[in-house]
Image (cartoon, rainbow, N blue to C red; front, side, top):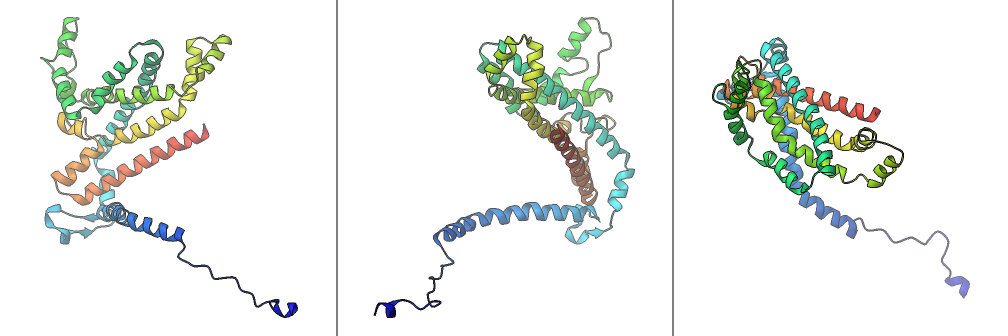
Length: 310
């Protein structure tokens, strides 16, 4: 009897697993909630990039409507390479990047170390330096335009008082207009850079500095051998974000100089604005946009490569 009750080999089957398990149901609900956001991002980003690329290969007067789009191939890019104002804008962008990225980073690092180690009321200085960053850049530009006034500005008045008979004309001189804008931008963003560095300094253990002092290291040795290397990740973050930001500058230039005088302060983003919304040449403006995208991508890739090699 017991032998008859035993199951025949090969006839036993495991119960079928259900496809819609509780875990998969929860995942489906989550994806359904995310679907509108994902679809919106795909439409706004992927479609916009694709349409912009198509426009860069077309000729389109914005006032003619969508029916006015005419495909012309690489004509806009050929024109772009022959346009002297584009070459001038690229040179200006590079100069502006040099003046507003490595130099302010170095100044901010030194100031952050001094405030962190040698200054009382650190919170006050954090707020004082950070206020320009959160203020309107147009309001800041308006104040600095008064300070930089060629004849009535306090800066030139001071320079003449100390014996400089022919002070710079600042914003109205082609030789100094872009430098003046770079000074304003660097001053406005300095507080942000200092705050980021001070946050990084708090993560460096004092025991490392104490061990270096026991070994006889002075302040300069500790700065270059401990502080700078251990803030490498912070410096890289600032370098990437500020580099991209330097190529996106527009508002302060549009307000103070409108790219002048004689295109001495024009940059790529301002040229995009001029071609697209002043002359309504959207195809050419899109081609300049892709040139800007390529430059930023190349510089970012080179920076990443340098960091990986380091």
